[in-house]
Image (tube, rainbow, N blue to C red; front, top):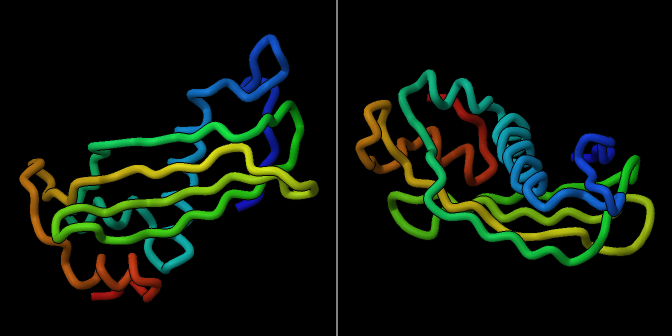
Length: 132
């Protein structure tokens, strides 16, 4: 996903404010599932929620207003009940990584009870279509 840093995402030092990176990670997760054939809203409509249980960010470089960035997101299953999204954000038109990290999500039903992911979700996370 390519995007530009908006003015509202910067601080007085004309640098991306640190909490914005986690918001960008959310964009990465949403676009990842969409690119695999299933929107995040459809995942929830099918009764599966993915609440964050852990987040890690490494701030590796600087980005300022109107910089063009490129974000790459991948997914994996580190355990039977958790999904991990790894994210890397780099400058699109020059060298340099801005941030990288991951979010770890529990797989739950709509009541919040941990469940094993259904096959259709595993297919999405492994790069397939999200059909039942």
